[in-house]
Image 1: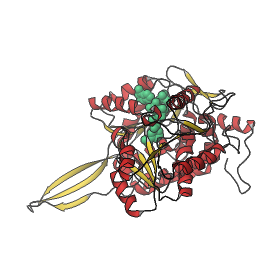
Image 2 (image 1 turned 90 degrees about the vertical axis):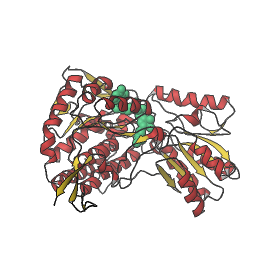
Image 3 (image 1 turned 45 degrees about the vertical axis):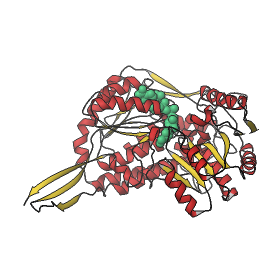
Image 4 (image 1 turned 90 degrees about the horizontal axis):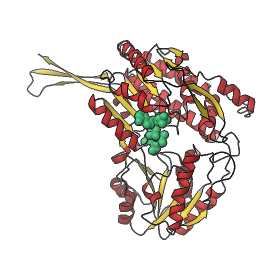
Length: 497
Ligand code: NAP
């Protein structure tokens, strides 16, 4: 169901049920929906109410082996299709995703919790990867050159890596899938996708989009499972699988890299973050607060790009903190289907406990609470937007990903201290920086050990840009001209002349 000129339909219980009931809940395997080999099912819960929405097939190791067989069987044919044909499939998938955007957004809100407006934004963002890679499919260029001694010609070509395995997290159930499937299909690779157990519905609804767009059998399989390790072992244990692409936590990423070493499969790792948000004394403070609200509150703070440490020049820290607390404290907390809600529930009650423990430790060590700081009573895993100041430098919430709506503010007094403090983390995904001084912006950006920098802006995600990290945030890039390279190998042919 799509939005018309009168605006999106109001969300009634009947509409929620109808949208959930329309999702295929089997495994997509070799172009068909099937039950899991063991017949088991996984319940899918609404984190705002704790109620079970539905259940989906629970894939086993045997299903993983069947899925790889299908991907391997389809690989040569798919790699041999015309790039334009692959691009047009992705273009149709883009159009269908936009057309079904209201349903996909509601599904995401129901299974993951984020407010509907944010789910709609994710549909736009996720669909854009399909459009971008539909355009990139015809641009996998090679090279022709003359060997330095003139005796031969060097023909360099790009070829698909081969069957790939993609693992995605629960926090962006659509976009994390499309930014892997888009470039893989554009490059001519087949894929097995394992969505997060908590949010399989969006991935399954998107699989139906791909089928309706004309996906040939075996090109993409989708396998939700309650046992990620058991599903993964036979895939990475098979040398016919040529790549694993993962978005998720750093500990799981480390394990996957070790597993992939056995068969030397290529790896792309989009892992955790610990983003610093730097505000210099010369910053436009209003713009910095706007940016901070976005960088902290997008996805309820459950994003790898979420600002995790606010580092503010001592001269403006008090004013910045007060303005941020005012803005965050005014954000309504509620179920994501409520149009007034700006802050949905966290993914589980355990996740909320973890966030609250980080806050409690910081407060015991001397941090001051400007707003929030106590879990919201009632069903669901709600936690209010929270601003803390005077946060000690060794507080655990400055070292670990908070993954919740908590903004800890600390101060610095000069650029060297700001950069040192920002880089003082094992992670290196994204840093944000607010200043009106262009040369400071360039100098500091160059010294920040992060894969991405948001300069006077609180969001960096863009399908046309290379998204990715350094250090413990992983390697590989998704989006931009770099995104398709992750799915291409380089071959060179030497021609004697
Ligand atoms: P997670 O526990 O690492 O889970 C991510 C995915 O890995 C899920 O599909 C999960 O399956 C699967 N998984 C877990 N253990 C596995 C194993 N032994 N073998 C194979 N797969 C396994 O991470 P999360 O807590 O759900 O997600 C949040 C993390 O993702 C954060 O650290 C965040 O920063 C990161 N993230 C990074 C980016 C980025 O682009 N850098 C973007 C978004 C999120 P189950 O669902 O069955 O556990």
